[in-house]
Length: 306
Ligand SMILES: NC(=O)c1ccc[n+]([C@@H]2O[C@H](COP(=O)([O-])OP(=O)(O)OC[C@H]3O[C@@H](n4cnc5c(N)ncnc54)[C@H](O)[C@@H]3O)[C@@H](O)[C@H]2O)c1
View 1 (cartoon, helix red, strand yellow):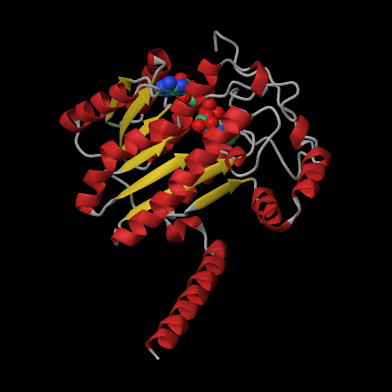
View 2 (cartoon, rainbow, N blue to C red):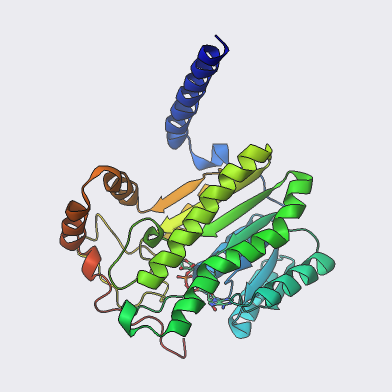
């Protein structure tokens, strides 16, 4: 009897959360957004692109910022922009491929400014090389920055969040963390790792009953920040290369609404659902037709002096 009641309760809960999710897609973000003013936000890869834009948005929401990047100049430029907005900012030069540097910088952040409320694991790199052309060292670096760094930053800052049952872990992954792409084996593997890390953490926090700590994983297709310069899309309406501002607005909305998974553009949700039941060969044909399999053919990436 107990089992029957448990099963009915689970079904009712599932229906409730399903309906809630559908209804919430029609409720404007401004009605759902949480207040993050005064929160301490750490953004990795804050020296350019999405990291810089997210930092600016957080500052506009009244947050205090901690900026990490390997690129000291870019990071300081972001810090100056934020100071002009009146935000409190601390910038640190950190190489996220080095675990010891991460732990050392995390300790320094705690001593200098305190416990982090929102951790945004955004820094990322791409080699853009086919597997057999890619030096081992670059493959390892990609895994270290795009995946392993997430383990170390979360291990450093999650205990403080658990103690206060307050926090938000944001993983800037990629659509390439959901679906494999020709020419991006190392990048895809690293982003699949990041997506899996986020998903497991979400389950772990649920099991711990820490309902005040939220997770958001971000899976964009291409964004015109320069990181993927040269990439092409065959169907820009279906799979657009979005602007950094557009992507940042979507990411901010997802964070403010405690959205767990964000795909940009929406068509990625459909691709993900199709992947679940289409035979693998059909997936290959579709990826080829949609131009995904050739999107990296003219990739140049950032030039050295960018
Ligand atoms: N641009 C795209 O098309 C796209 C698409 C999907 C996902 N993403 C992801 O979004 C995130 C942001 O990308 P972006 O487009 O803003 O790229 P970007 O190159 O403008 O920014 C990445 C930042 O990470 C920093 N970084 C790189 N290696 C580092 C290291 N070892 N230690 C510390 N910092 C390091 C860089 O200095 C840079 O400031 C990345 O994780 C990327 O993989 C980007």
